[in-house]
Image (cartoon, rainbow, N blue to C red):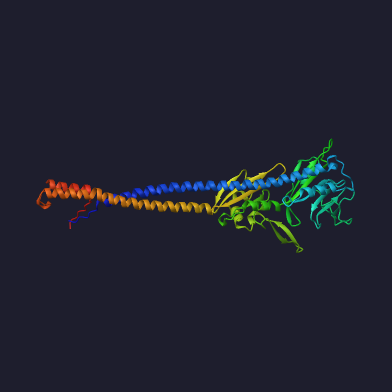
Length: 436
């Protein structure tokens, strides 16, 4: 017969291992899940705040363009009185207004007045406008008036006193006619009273133009439209300022999509929205970039995550946020009554958030393992000193009280044998008996 015995302290210890391990894993799982939800919520808040900042930057340029266009009608009484001259218009009010409005923080590109050209089948456009640059030290005043239409002539003007640099034209060309959106403004029956023209490249940079109508009493069609134009570069600068971070793990990105085409309007990273290509005559042309083809890998990653919307951004009805691998992305539709129809997209890297979660997880795992080891040690020592040793003493005293009798001298029903069996059971010994 063979007997294999295990002490009670070992059985209790093994049981405590299972209990503590189950409890620790449960607590860790709950904590990890709660931390993950908390970090996702935090990332969504940070991303939403960044999207709100981008929306504010767009609102700012929209406001500035509207204010500049309204100022044209305010400072030029010939517009509001519906009495623009056939020729020999004096542009001093427009030049002074341009000089007052334009600044490094508000770089107005151009502003002015447009009308439908007479005898042009509603396709031609006469205009009086002031623009920055175009080969001039300060400003250029360019016009295509009714008397000389379709000739488009430009003169350089001094900003300080609103006078021409000389009497020789600095530019002579031909008017390009009304754009589709301008026809909707000026030609009856009109469908709009204000409009933002689609973003287009002008002299190597993207520009945004706002136009609104000016009407005369008793006329069914608008008399004219006033307009103001700004470079998108100002919006690019605003997006960059919103995403700048000294933390390399917190490299955010923001960009704006044109909903109808998916083309990039503006981005916080330079040289993303346009590229130079050669036409058939080997001339360099500015080409817009679609967000699926952007050179920035983060935008490509976001484009892949936006596949449900990429083919038709009109499906993006409301603000959406989602976890895209290492990025938390928020996309916000931006529309107004003047025709802007964009999607504002921001992305916040989750590296720093996930590192926080990893640190918390590592700490909790270490703490759990430490608590398990301490619990096991205390359990083993407690069972040994509080149960096993007292029982051993009790057994020793009983044997001493019974004299020199041994178990072999007694039958199975004797008190000492029964006590031994009871002690063995209480002390936790497990016997395996076999015939050998």
